[in-house]
Image (cartoon, rainbow, N blue to C red; front, side, top):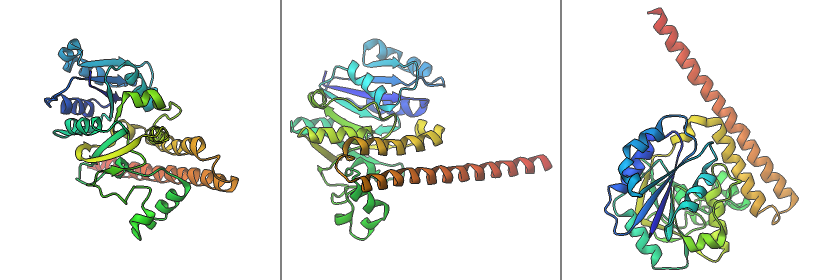
Length: 307
């Protein structure tokens, strides 16, 4: 088995089906399998998906795991990877669409260089712009400071480390990290550095894995000659408050794991306060937005009742 594609589903029937179909409709020149892991979806998505793909499930092309609880992105992906058989493993988000020849091009490129520990393609948003998270730098205090002050608008090469702006979006090259929406990795690399860190529930696990892959002496490659479309959202839109917490908590988990011993108590304290102040601001902004939406809905109801 050449390639195992790991997809995690959580209440996203339409998006997940689109992602699977975007793979199945291609005539790939190598043997592959799709490992679909469901995180205890509360809708009927898995009942429908099992019915849609019953023939290829019987054939063994699609393997399904049904978790009893929402275990998070990292743990669910790890379950799929442990059950898989491929020489190469691809983490693929359930809200993506695989563009023509993407998988063939990525496999051909990564197989040429045994020093590549992870490869990511160009990730395009529905409006045609680049999803900047598909190539980025590690979030050190310095790079994060530059990013939040928007200094990259003044000099993208000097200050654009956070989004790896030194590398053009159409240029093949090494970066610090990729996004978990599309990460292609050799199994022998993961055998050496380990799978996703399950301390991360959602967000941050991809950055952490890239960090460990680079520590293991391997390259992280951005390969824009292949691409996917990222519809971004899916299950995360349904739990906005928890998503905000998971994002900021992931930032702190990553910092504690990799940087806290490197920097002074003063810097560590500043980072901690900065992360959780930003969290509080995002929660406040979200609450105001929800309140505004409710006011609009109440107004519409009143208007309808008066008619």
